[in-house]
Length: 540
Ligand code: FAD
Figure (tube, rainbow, N blue to C red):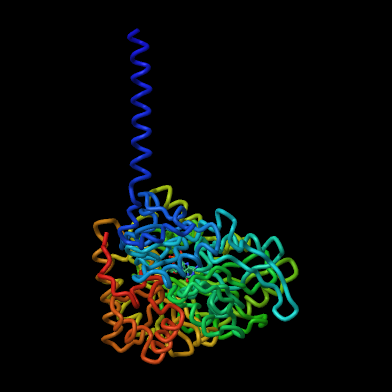
């Protein structure tokens, strides 16, 4: 009897809990309704919007681990139409439009893909559900080979898919787990840029959903204003849902060489000489050129790539100890079975007259995929040690060639070396302005040759301030000394700074006109803090 009673009671209690949970779920308004228009619920999208802690946490953090902006909800689109529908709703139906930010991988470092109280569109959802464009390789007599690629796709997947056809894109980033839409919204630079231009120079066509909610196909010939606006456009004009990327025949292997210098002017003279051979079909041109500082940070390798033979570490470390800073020139030449001999002859010619320290040239021979994906193993190692998801107070600058020597003495020698707090790689490599297109939104210095400088710092959660201060002091030194630097992956706090320090009057006018044309209600990518008057983001 007692047993029967308890079973019935148990059943009743379970039923009560279930019904009350159901009622509370049904009756409870979604918390995003506090911020977004309630009639958004009438759209079919409502059940693709999530505001649970998992979704909100992901969309309110990024690789930088510095800024946190809480969105009202995250859209997990299952088709491009969902994105179109959301933006159109925000633009037309709503009297108080809310912000929308596409999020690729959230590899930004200052909250650029976040949207406070708005909607973050998780682009990877299109990839997972395979309802986006995917990656399709085709060719035409006028364009040659190309790949039509969803904006949500990762470059590493583009690499593997195109290699199946013996083809490859020509312009890369150092790290391949970035989205096509995310890098095209900035520029996409690496050691190929001096010759092939940034990734934005290698796009034939795009499908974009503008801030008006319109689906527009654009290219140099068709809707060119939107095409140029979006490339390097920091997500301000539309969401890229497809890009047509130029392809070439893929090489198989890579001769990868690093040479060390203690004299900065010899180092930059050699870099500049090597990038002056930059014709697309020119045989004696390199395929990749970068450079980095070796500082007294322990082993000469870092997470960005493991390169130096272990047996040479002691010799390199003692060189760094002697000079404080050693400059490392990094080059690569791609080849396959047919071009092996000519590649070696061409490298030989290129090396003649280079002024690196005798005995300090190191080379490796690796597969094309291993070369392009060289940062991944470092990432996995850091992840396994819990050191990947730490704050990253990065600063990336473009410095005009005419002032690079002043930058070396004022920044590398006077700030970086003296403070001795720099953690992580510091990149230094030149590129040619002629490979960029000034009609695009990306901003670069005026000179024919300029340097990309990347301070790729990591820090602990409590000791970021010194690196932030160093980044600030470097910018201040440049402004005070009249060095016209431009930030890459820029981060400014006011519209005045964007206008005066970044774009300059003429380019700003174009940028602003395009914003008024393609996103007049200032809906898109508020995390860039260009048009939206958001209060300073919460700093973690
Ligand atoms: P997100 O950070 O998600 O987004 C960046 C911006 O673009 C946001 O404003 C977002 O709203 C917008 N956006 C995202 N998707 C779209 C879309 N489909 N349409 C329109 N707007 C969109 N950059 C280089 O150029 N070269 C490098 O070698 C390089 N190496 C890197 C290495 C590492 C380890 C990391 C973390 C970053 C590196 N980056 C490099 C920077 C990288 O290019 C940026 O982080 C870029 O934003 C791409 O990241 P993402 O795809 O995660 O974009």
